[in-house]
Length: 219
Image (cartoon, rainbow, N blue to C red):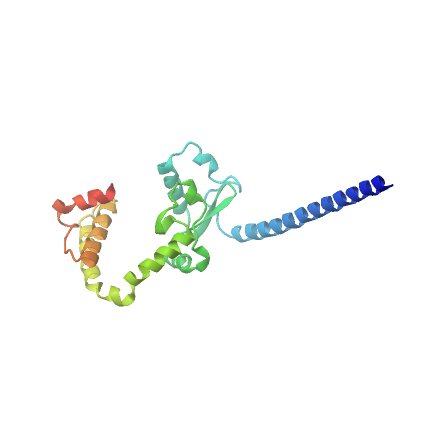
């Protein structure tokens, strides 16, 4: 009799455990599906630049592509967007914005501070710009005193002078259909930093002899 009761108890226990596990699974699955359906409804309002079906997106174009090809693929998708749009990368939805107004909203949003998962896919997950949210917060606390409004006001004249030099360098190439702005921007960036932060009034942008700084920056 004792063994029969023990068996019945074990059966009831297993039955309750099974019912609890199934019920919990159904509840969690329901919550996930509700969130996923809500997410799909929100993203369905955005135009799809990839033109392919969901859950696949640009995956076929990514097969066999190197890092440079992947960036080119992303740029190609961005050029198809007017204002705001999206494309699928597997089950991930990548939202694209290419207007100053939308970019400002994204940069000022507290919901957009963390980095997307595909940064790990590209192997760029370190530093203040591409690192984790926790690392960015620590670095921001350290850097904030150096970018206070009172301190930056003293550099307005430097920013104005270097910006005018940059515009003049662009004017010389206005006749070209297209040109690479990276060399000018690199020289402008280094020139401004050296003058504002280190008080070295150099003219890397116009003096070719000092472009070795830019060469090291490119490396």
